[in-house]
Length: 90
Image (tube, rainbow, N blue to C red; front, side, top):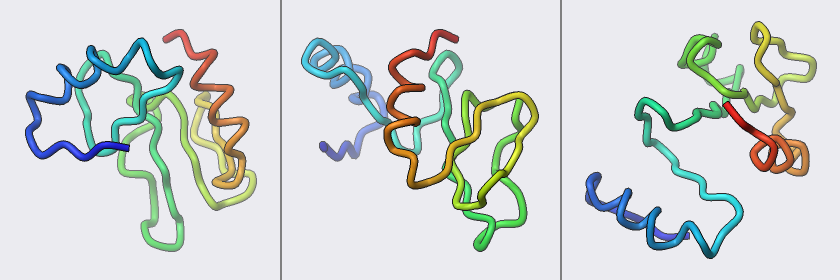
């Protein structure tokens, strides 16, 4: 885990680290071409922040939650989310 306080530096860090890791998570970065997985808590918000068309997947604490055609994972399904990230080709 590494914090970054300069937005432009993040792409340098990704290029530098990408060969070392299978998965890189970027929290709070939203740019065209970078897939977005939203973590949604229905106890805190009435609906996800982004419409399903802008998401690659949704992670939620609400069992059986559906968001259109995008994959939805329970917050405890770490294996399922990791598998989705490894197989994602969007």
